[in-house]
Length: 409
Length: 48
Image 1 (cartoon, rainbow over the protein chains, first blue to last red):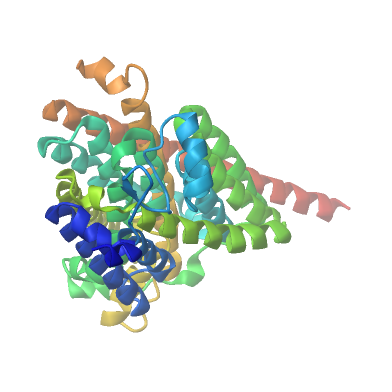
Image 2: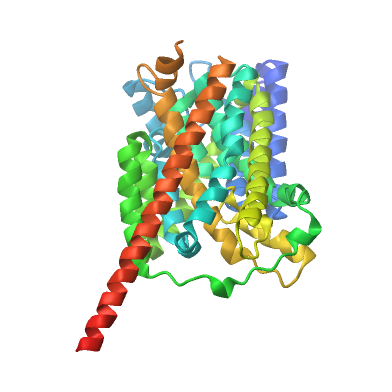
C-alpha cells in the first residue's frame, strides 16, 4: 500500500467509497468515449475533444493533499471566500480561467463576440418576418420544458436553466445557468453541448415527419434581395440598443454578439480576424477543457443529473418539432415555393441545424438548395433564444424574482 | 406551482413574439430608410 502511494491516482481509488471510485471510472470511460466520438466527428470535436481530455485527466488525477483531503490540481469550483480563491489561484492551473471567465459569464460573451464576427445576416434582413416567425416557433422546447422540469421536481430557476437547452445555443445555456442555477451549471452545460453534438445525427430522423414531396421543394436563392453593409451595421447597432434597454441582465450577451456583427459589417478586418480566430477558438478550447475538468465524480452522483439528461432531450425534440410545425405553417401562408425543412434550421445551433436542413433536402432532391434561406431563421434563433434567456433571468433572479412576485412563493 | 410555471412560460413566449415582431419592424424600418436614401442619391446624381 505504501508503494501504491507513489501512484496517487490509483491509491485514491482505494481511499474513497466504492460508489465514488466507480463514478470516477465511469467518467474516465466517458472521457475516452467523447475523445473517440470527436475523432470520428460524431460529436463536435471543437468542444468535445478538450472536454473529454479534461474529464479523463481530472478523474484520473486525484491525489491526497497534506491535510489528508483528496483533490486535484485542475480547478476548485467550490472556492468561496477571497482567501480560498487566492489559495486555489496559486495551486490549480485552470483556476484562473474558472475564476476570471466562468463565474462572471465572460467565456460565453467571448464566444458570442466570435460568433457575431462570423455570422451572415443577409437573409435575416432580406426576410425578417419569415426568419423570426420560424425562430419563435422553434422555441417551443425552451417554453414547454420549463413546466415539465418543474413537474419533475426541479426548482423554478433550475427548470428555466435546463429549458434553455431547447434554444440549442451552448454559450447561452452556460450564461443562463451561471446566472440562475450556479450549482448545476456544469451538468446543464455538458448536457447542452453533448446534445448539440448529437443534433446533427438526430434531427434528420425528426425531419422525416415532413412528407417527402415537401422536403423536395426547390427554393430559388437568386430571388433573395441584396442587403447593403450599411443596413446590416445599422441593424446591429439599433437592435443591440433596443434589446439591452429591455433586458439589462442579458445585456452582456447582446452586446457581445452585436459588437462582433458590427465589427464584421464595418469591415475592420484586423478585429474580424482576431474575434473569429484566436478569440473564438481560444475561448471554445478553454470552455471545453475547463468544463471537462469541472466534471468530477460529485457531479454524476447528483440525482438531478439524470433528470437533466432527460429534460435536455425533451427540450431539443420539442424545439425541433416546433421548427417543423413553423415551416409547415409558413408554407401554407406564403405564396412563394417554400421548403418546410427550413423550419428545423430555426433551432439556433449555428450553423449545424441549417446544415441539417440542407442535408435532409439534398437526400430527397439533389437540386434543392435551401441553405441560404435556412441561415435566416438560424441566426434569428440566436436572437429569440437571447430574448427568452433575458426573460427567464429577469423572472427568476434577484432579491424577489418577478416569478414569485406574480404568482407568490 | 407547475400551472404557474406553465403560465409564466406562455407569458415569456408572448413577450418573445412581441419583441421578435419589433426586431422585424426595426429591420423593415432600416430597409425602408436605406432604400429611400438610395433613391434620393440616385435622383441627386441625375440632377447633376
